[in-house]
Image (tube, rainbow, N blue to C red; front, side):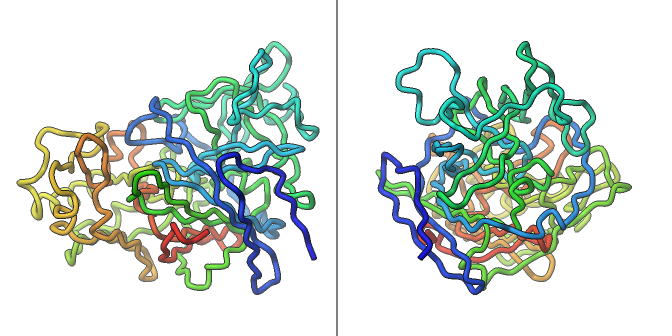
Length: 442
């Protein structure tokens, strides 16, 4: 019998690991993890996954994901950002990280060498880990113009590789690049991965970068697939629903429906294109029974690269280019126009907001459906069309991407990924969806 020893016991709850036997006799674990509210300093409507700089990337070869040595299940609690807790280091220390399929570099909060007793549980102390090492200035990653990695790096006063990571919403992470393991059990760990060790940041949690870049966690750990299930936001007092996060095989994947990822050759790399994002071919949007008159071209990159459609766990809302957003708003106004909160724009990006009974307004709007190729759909039921943004105001969970700054894109955010499994099958370059009650998925 194979025994896995969980090194980290959460202080707020007991772990109940569940073994799941798959068709290929591999093992997967799933257990609930704690979460914290998102930082009040973050943008109220957009926790960006994308760096505020032009991205340049080399072609990712699917052979990078030829074998996946891990089958690991975990959970996250929904708090507008998707939080997972991973055991990092030797022996492992629990680190809360924002699950982000839209960015590359993973980074953790590192303990500064100043008196701090006891150190905060959210902070990693490198001195306690035997597998921790730093990247010196002469490391190849510290040189400029590294293909598909545009992170600004420099030498600090200790001749270590220093980085500053700015996100489009103003989030900052700054520190040194290091190598460290993710230690799942006594017998299972990743090789040392390149991470950011942040000593200055504007959020208390780290980032688990999961895009297609060669330095993302998914690439460095050689995952063939990973998946997550976002629970609904409706909560009763004192209860936060818990979803699931899997590395490796997912026991629920039998019912998933898949769409292919769009890939871009080197000659197709336009200045506003993010070739490392999970780009899909969206076909259209329905509201109720009405198919909106949006040309498919609105969901595809234009000659500059703007307009691609991406699946992003790190963005809360969904964002659409103006050509699509205006058609959605036109239909919402037709259905419930007199109830719109006039002159109100949430977060500077969404002007489809309401006071009053959200359930009643949702029924008037009806289900919203994002259509993809091969007949695959994301159905947003009418009860979840509106997001509670506080102060008695509810908004359609869609914003104008032109208002975010930078190139406009279509981004399917985690608000519209509630109660579905989303699987990123990296070996086969596809994304799968499966309907679920995510609060019962662990």
